[in-house]
Image (tube, rainbow, N blue to C red):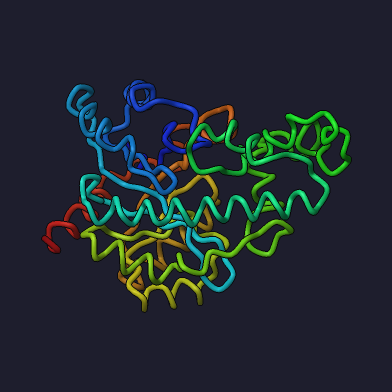
Length: 290
């Protein structure tokens, strides 16, 4: 089994340390894993070191939030070099843009009647880029917000099973009330940058992207799809696999694991199955490029 989409505590909505991830991966019999933290390679070096200790293959990666046709699309960059000065400079630029986006999201949420401050947001993101979890925790830290009927679903209602993910989907994604565009981090531009850095761009959990948008991104250089994901039904996985093979795309498998406190319905290794052959093809693409 492989799981090429795992979040560590380098993501502000990731629960576990790199060592904890490797311990869980060994317990589940995973042969290969990737850390895919949000706009960060902070724990990739530790992953490389632990791979030798645990005898589990490790593929360097990161997950980038990008925008295309009003959609918030996530790109996975496999075999990224965490020591690249160009990458470090780019991630710092992204961090600055994401920090500004967070401030604008805060203002929009304040305008919607949710009271919290930038200090609250920083406290719950602990120096990392804020995610849906950071925003909802900051909002719920104020008693006056907890009585707001709009928040009941996330506290004890039908959105409470995965409150942080659902809050992000309901308020912060494209087309939602507190969405803030980041035009400078467009998906095509990110694809070009990832390839320029020698990495392989893969579209994560593409179920809500649409075939036409995917075809447009293929023309921009997209190299693969995360077909095997707990967000896809078996029927969707089959359809995406056929689509990817028809288009000559690479196929990957990943759980998008964050930890039980964040995504209680997602297990490490879930949805990825026994697809080690996919890693062989991913590795062969990198070899052809080098």
